[in-house]
Image (cartoon, rainbow, N blue to C red; front, top):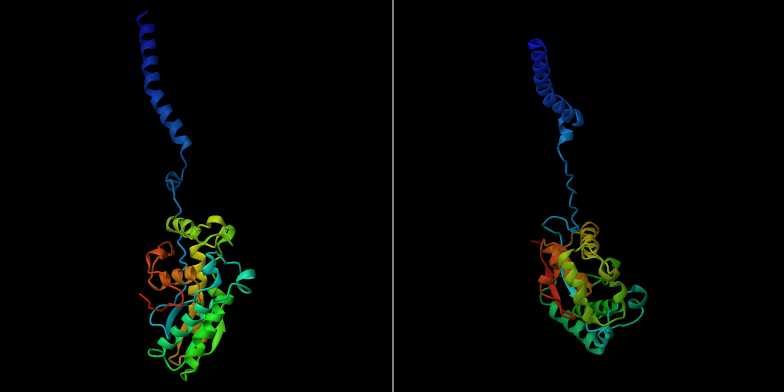
Length: 253
């Protein structure tokens, strides 16, 4: 009887000792053999910059010129579709006069050669022509070329609607410059195409000390300014806005 009791006690003690070891083995068997696999590896997505400007110093001086007062401005309409903007909504008489005055004022600081690059919209082409005419009359060499990269930012379903709705797009820009509210072109895409044009002009234009005047639209130039300032396109509205027919030098920072 004593022997039987001792045998039972030994079996009981053995079961207690082996149970945790079995549990440990079970736990270990579910773990991967590779220690690297135990870690939760988070892949960090590489941030791709939309700023295509080459590093300083640039070979030319660059100036932003917003188009003069247009018929779309007067009507308070958003006109961003090239199918419409390249054919209609040109400058008002006040807009042409404003562009001419800007050209006359620029004579005091311009290089002898000024290359004008403009959007193909009617309001920017007419602005470029009035501006360049004022310079040519004073003896400046002032060729004009068209760059579709300077087109107005596309505003999607807001097209032909009231220009008071710009604010709704800019509010989203501040949160996410890669977003496309109302189907609008993203701020990042605008910065990429406008700054990419400057990078291309730096390569294509001769190194002859000429100035380059970029005739474009409010949002496109606002976002290009952010590239020159080294700012994320989400901050484009933090910069001073360009008025119609206003000329502003763009300097790399």
